[in-house]
Length: 182
Image 1 (cartoon, rainbow, N blue to C red):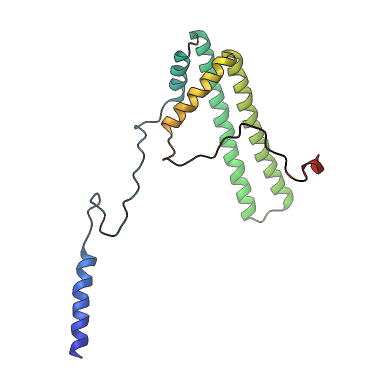
Image 2 (image 1 turned 90 degrees about the vertical axis):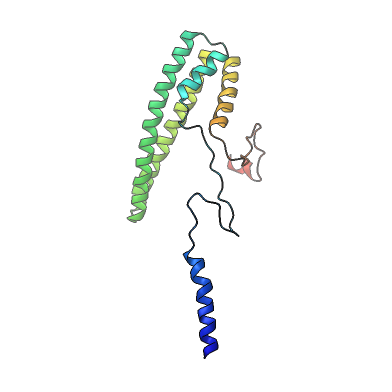
């Protein structure tokens, strides 16, 4: 009996001090734990896309009046895209609500068509914006601008060393039975 009491007291004497220890909030991790991953610092504020675009256009030698046209084009494009994005969020929420309510197929299909229509509008805006930029800059300067803009984007939004999926620069190979779908 005394032996059991001694073991219990000894165990309590070892467990309670360990539980009572508190690690300081910014202190080193306790033994046996891994360090938390370091956060990537992005230099404070987010880079203003208009200023970044302006700087790149100056670097590649675009005239001031063309830069102003491109600036106005991008500001208008951003407004339209933001409007589309807001409508898309509302449409997706509506679809989600319909699913929760167990709505009929007709209502769900209507909500899906609304989402698809908004996504189509977004894609159309992106394509026509690219075409307008290309017509103002010309092929060579447009390609140089896109190359530098992508590099700048990667600089401001790093992916913590993770590999990104490769970009396909060639048409995809045909899959078995594709000719039956045509």
